[in-house]
Length: 123
Image (cartoon, rainbow, N blue to C red; front, side, top):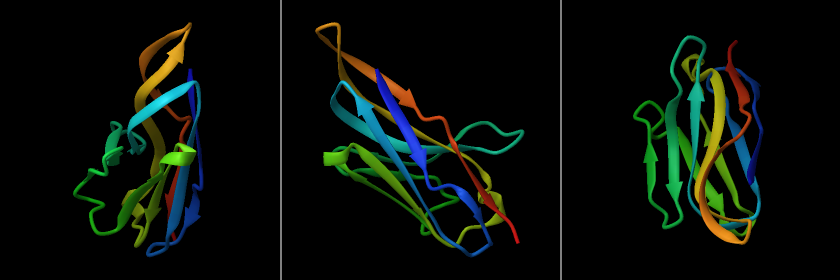
């Protein structure tokens, strides 16, 4: 299977910056889309940003111009640079990836989620 491990969360003051990282490991053949989602208490999980292997990006309107998603395909790692953070950005941030893996001698599709990392924006 494919494991996703996030890092980089924490507490930051409004206007500050954080950089999240997510590394994928396992019997990976290829990764198509990697992305970030977030869930605040009492809210549904929502898309933050995604990036395909071809370089296409998609951002939530609320983070456009402040967050930047990037990836290192050689390391199967995706990053989220978050600038000008606001209290409403406070949430647990989850990494997501989909693609192809090898399982029991066959190539199969996968979709995996990380365990989540807390981002808190407060003065």
